[in-house]
Each structure stands twice: as structure tokens, then as C-alpha cells.
Length: 213
Image 1: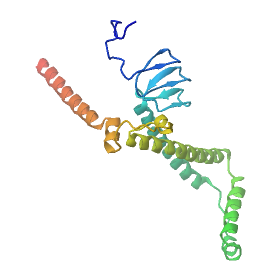
Image 2: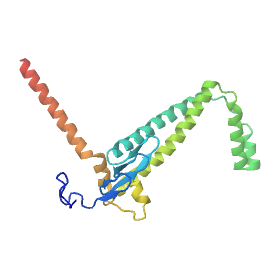
Image 3: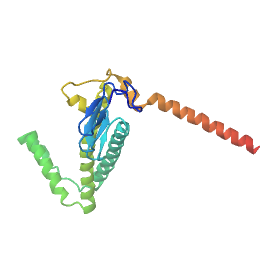
Image 4: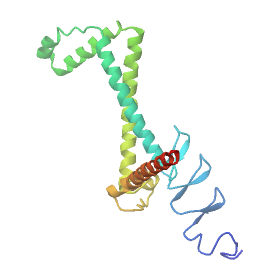
């Protein structure tokens, strides 16, 4: 078949395309084949096992918003559980800390603090143990997701993706800067959509009120 002879594909329409040996189809530029999803994904960043899907051009912004919501939720849960743990924790006995600090130094004092906390934890109720566990779990998840969110925002700022960063070529599709974040989140477009939607709502209310009169 001659190039461009097929009626649905014009001449030069597949320029810069490559052939995917897994899909047996033309692969557009900036696309990568995911063996887990068994398809080519445009601007693929990575395959996330937690959402069971690839993060690419169609859902990258939704994935970043998901990370932001997880960080906010875990921060709220950690703050509430730490506050509750502070009030339900049994009284601590730090009478020997001053003498320990003078005799053995900071390491011995740290061991004494950990031992005091561990011994007082035996007097916690089941509700208190669950609260403390949720506090530690929230802090751990918040730290991990926070690092991932920072990594994603740094790649967006650089105009790059995780896969391109790992590749030997380290191809960057644009200049680094704040404009990449604005373009990614669509801030100017979102403001214009909100304003246009508000104006359209006002016009509809005026038309409905005039019809009633």
C-alpha cells in the first residue's frame, strides 16, 4: 500500500509516528507502551498500581488533584489523632530525666523518654491504641504521598515526565518555568469558565423572571 493511499489517513498525517510492535499500530510522538495496560499512552508518566491505571495526558491532572486531596486528608487525620492522643495518653513520669541528662547525656535521656512512653502505652485503652496507630499511619502516608506530590510538581515545572526523566535521552518537551504549572492546571481557562458560567446563569435568571412577568 502506497503512503497516503488509504482514504482515512492523509499524506503526512502519520509523520513522526513510530510503529508499536506490541499493539501492531502506529504510535504517536511522546507516547509509550504500557505492558500492564496493554496499550500506548500519550505523555505517559508512569503506571500507578494503586489506581490500577496509567497516568498520562488524559488523567495526569486528576491524579495530581488526587494526591493533593490525600495530603490534605492525611494532614487533617494526623492533626486530630495527635490532639486526641495527647489528651488520652496516661500521665508520664519524667522525674529521673534531669539526673539522667547530667550523668549520661542526650542518648541516655532519649532512651529514657522512649522507655517511659512505651511503659505508659500499656495503660492505654483499645480506643487509645487505635487512635495512636491512626496517627502514626496518617503521618507515614502523608510523608510518602507528599514526596510523590513534590516529585510530580517538580516534573511538571520542568515540562518533563517521569519516564522521560528515566530515559537516557532525558528529552524535555518545553521550557521549565511557572507557566508549565499554570498550563497544566488550566488556571486562566478555569477562571474564564467560572466567569462565563456565572454570567450565563445570571442571563438565564433574568430571562426566566421576564417571562414570568
